[in-house]
Image (spheres, rainbow, N blue to C red):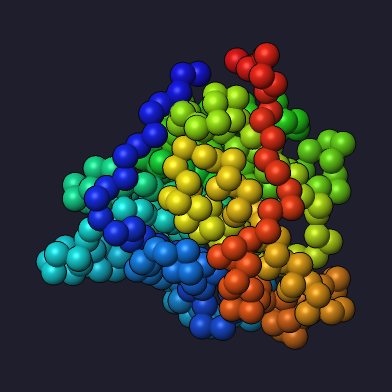
Length: 324
């Protein structure tokens, strides 16, 4: 696999169009993504794919889901007022096929104004073998969004859905990354893999075809962190937002961007666990438990800006054997 040159960034202030879910109360989707990106120096314009009272882990939620026509109407308004200059497009939860189809149009429209637009796609579809989007959505992600994405951040289950490959090893994870890269994105990060022999750790696997300042062997990386024995909503949304921001600050240095994104997420998780007490290990997610588990972003804004890196990303292939 040959390295690409690092894309030059547009000569405009970094601005993200973030198309994700929204909750009135809680920290998921755009509520988990906007604040960290702003802290790290990016302007963020959000569009809400859903607007719910709270996240769906609660016993009950109320609200509405955006369709594709409503999304496009907003884009038309932005364009009419010359407000459509973006360096980044970030997408998360997409609830309907019409919305996904119009996101393709949005990416095309944004690239008319900025051909170097970075499209970071978090293909939110499910986790741990459980699909939580409509059955037709995985194929739509695979056929419509993978080819136009710049960066993708699937979890292990989502990477398997997008590639048709079973990931049972580090080599299998790299194979899945490369299968996606052949179809579109130059960088793929599998955000949370459970690999044999490392069951008590979350393994992050990253692969990029962008030339790295540290050398070619840093194009494929692993990073492992101890698994937190609790379930929190919004961690993937937070991680992808942090990754976008740190990749913008460290072009050609995926290792540093990955380490800082993981460090920020881990600091928020550790503090949230410490403050939610017995709710962290509760097996029944009542409203009280779900409320206690909301990520503590505001309280951890300093560590999001200046994270302490405790876990380093390592090259998967040694210097004398690229494994290609």
